[in-house]
Length: 61
Image: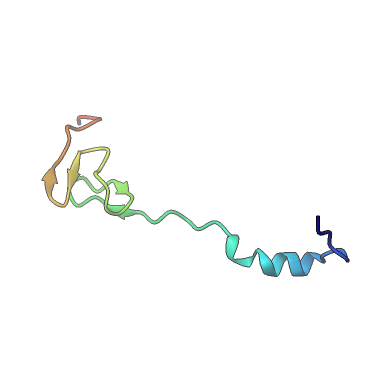
C-alpha cells in the first residue's frame, strides 16, 4: 500500500479542498403566496407550481 513521503501542509490541503465549500441554497418567491421556496418545486404552503394548483395546500390559510 502506498504511503506519503512527507507531511502535507495545511496550505496544500486547503488549496486542494478549495472547491469543496458549501453553497447557500437558492430561494425564490412563490408567485401565488410569496413564500420562499426552492426554484422549480411545488410550493409547500399553497400547492401551486407555475401558476397552477398541483396539490392541496398543506397549511390552509
